[in-house]
Image (cartoon, rainbow, N blue to C red; front, side, top):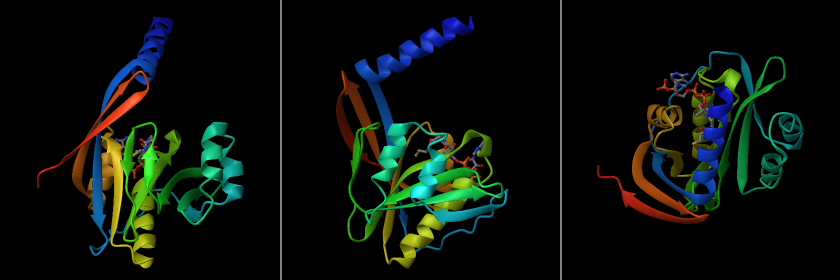
Length: 197
Ligand SMILES: CC(C)(COP(=O)(O)OP(=O)(O)OC[C@H]1O[C@@H](n2cnc3c(N)ncnc32)[C@H](O)[C@@H]1OP(=O)(O)O)[C@@H](O)C(=O)NCCC(=O)NCCS
């Protein structure tokens, strides 16, 4: 039965990736003139700017193409934070980009400006989820942008990613646009709608 489920999941995954899928994505924004909530994670962590040495550590747990992608972000167009546990493990990370971001997995393009930066690639390793690590990283990234005089921050997430959605809504983001992305044989068409106030 387990093998049967695995085969079905594999077939559905590949059908959705290579043949046909429809994804709903929410774009949300945070106005940086608002106050940023303070978050206390439920485990002791250090917050560090991501550098080459962090990528070395992450390479033990992430696929090589993901590490290569992060290596290309070690420049002034990006800023990444990693949360490190007392035993030295990277538990969570999150990036900011200061330039336009086309996400090939969702198929949407978000525009950065001199006043608007974009949150990308938030991830907490499964054993550390639910400990307020992303909530803390969200606050730290917002504080950084505020200190850099940015006015606005935008982020996007799949509308059924409830933990990501909760994180942004609790931080004070408002949902502004809904994207429907149709993927047919790898060709992606994204349609953007404004969410009514
Ligand atoms: C989404 C993700 C980054 C959240 O990371 P996290 O460190 O577990 O997040 P937090 O502990 O700060 O929790 C964020 C919100 O989700 C809720 N939450 C997290 N895990 C939960 C769980 N198991 N049960 C119920 N609620 C949970 C928290 O209560 C919090 O909501 P609140 O602020 O309203 O209380 C993590 O689940 C993940 O890496 N998922 C896979 C990658 C992904 O989806 N990335 C986001 C792309 S946009």
